[in-house]
Image 1 (cartoon, one colour):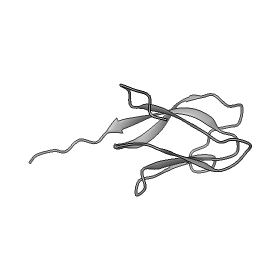
Image 2 (cartoon, helix red, strand yellow; image 1 turned 135 degrees about the vertical axis):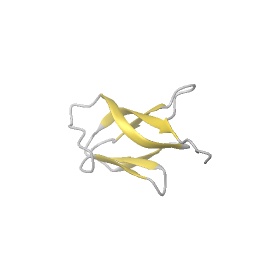
Image 3 (spheres, helix red, strand yellow; image 1 turned 90 degrees about the vertical axis):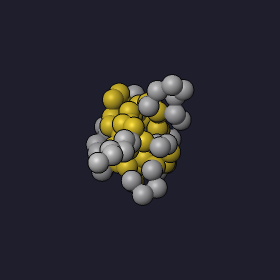
Image 4 (tube, rainbow, N blue to C red; image 1 turned 180 degrees about the vertical axis):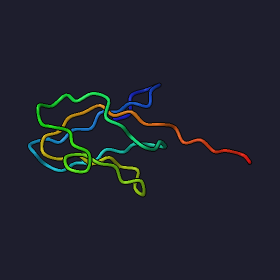
Length: 75
């Protein structure tokens, strides 16, 4: 779920199941706050697929993630 006016969203795994959350038009999500007691370990219990723009979570992970807006340089 993207939070209005911010590049922050929550993603959660329920009952230790795999789930995905759309990261929107942003890139490089980073963990900013872990809510769950389950460890948030990049590429083990959560990760990001840049092709689909989805963050995935597993093993009861609940976290807030922040994304960086894509910028285009003119050169």
